[in-house]
Length: 373
Image (cartoon, rainbow, N blue to C red; front, side):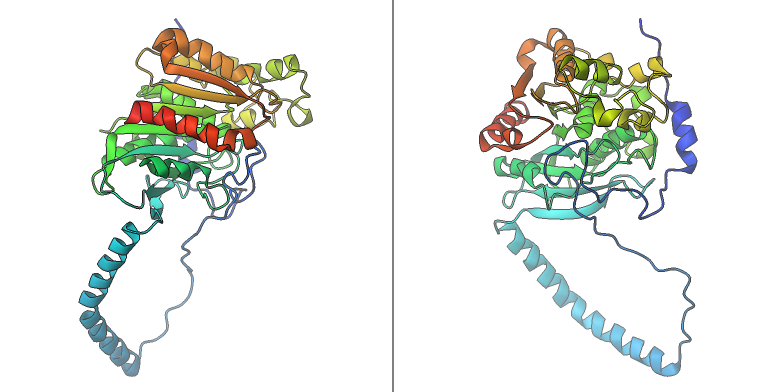
């Protein structure tokens, strides 16, 4: 039996750094770890509050102007409410999806935001797909302006939630999986007002995001990988279907697998270096604490009640060698049944056009349809 590893001490150490300074770090850059166009490269919209200004003195004339402005506003509010309702109805009947941007799914960090998209028509409840972006856990964002591919799920009548999570310069593991699970719990807790089906939630992610959805799928309600202090503790973080693209699974074997494929070390130094994305995620060189690193492996938590998995990997991938997905498949198939897990190799590197083809997206949507409808 494997030794139980607790991450509670890591969370306590993070207590003073959860609020990363705004504007620090590369969330707006194009991810280097997953070369799929636009994964989280668009700028997030922000609401800023300017502090430190002295308030102006209020004179009689200014107060009188405010009084008449408020009186006018009171007269216009009923008309504005009617117009807003009509605008919402018009939007729902158009070809454009209904969208809510920057919804807080937790209140601990500024990264705790998601965007929610509903199909243009229909009253739901809609099954939900949670999209988790890539970017080496170091960059990327929920924004889909430059990479709208996940929005394809709307065509089949799904709602889409695209989330931010704390990046490795904001907080170390397990903050990232804590955030993903908090987003799932939020979706369930708020299913009714947003017309979502809380019993049918799928997850989809690529590269670093693929790792997080793989861990989400296998660890379910594992207490050591779930921080209920982020909100909605009575809700489950389990999902019913998982799509994994090009994900690192066993950090300690990434360099071994790359060498076996004839690939050069990742960025010239390898995944086991102290400055690798995996070491940065954990906060220490992964070779120094192998037992702790093993506790981050989604395979460790595989159990018969795990959801179905659809796994794809580029056969020429030298960023994350395809043997990583084979490990995940080999662990899942005998436990949940080979009929519930699919592994496909695409003629691609770390992402690219074969992943994005209509025929391939159709396979993903068919998988979600099979298990979420």
